[in-house]
Amino acid sequence: MVKKSKTKQAYRHTPAFILLFLAQGDLYGAAILTTLQKELPCYHTDSAVIYRSLKDLEEEEAVSSYWETDTSGPAKKWYKITQKGKDLLIDFKEDIEMRKKNLDYFIESFNSIK
Image 1: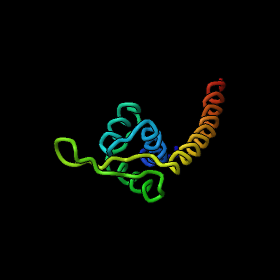
Image 2: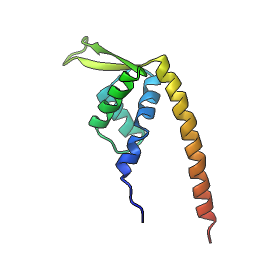
Image 3: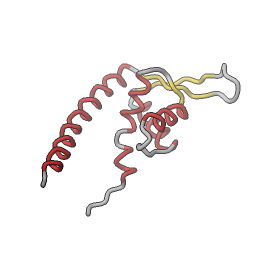
Image 4: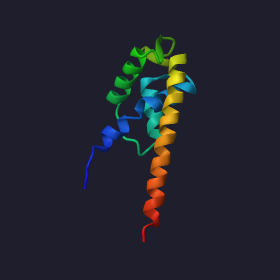
C-alpha cells in the first residue's frame, strides 16, 4: 500500500482555509487555528503551519496584517484578506471543486464494486 503523510496532504489546503476564514472577517493567528480545529476536527495541523502559511500569504500580498494593542494582554497581529487574496480564494475554490469531482468519482466507482 502506498503511504503518504496525511499531515503533508492536509497542509496543501491550509492557505485555502485561512483565506476562507479571513473572507468572513479579520482574525489573528491563534484564532485561525482554533477556527480550523473547531470547523474541521479531522484536519490536523499546528500553529507553526498556520503562521508559515500566513507568512507566505502575506509575501504573496494575499493577506495584510496589523497590530491590535487595544485589548488587555499582549498585542496581537491580526490578518485581513486583500483583493489578491479574494482572487486566490476563487482559484482555490475552482481547484477544490475539480478535486472533489475526482474524489466523488473514486468513491462512486469503489462503492459499485461487488
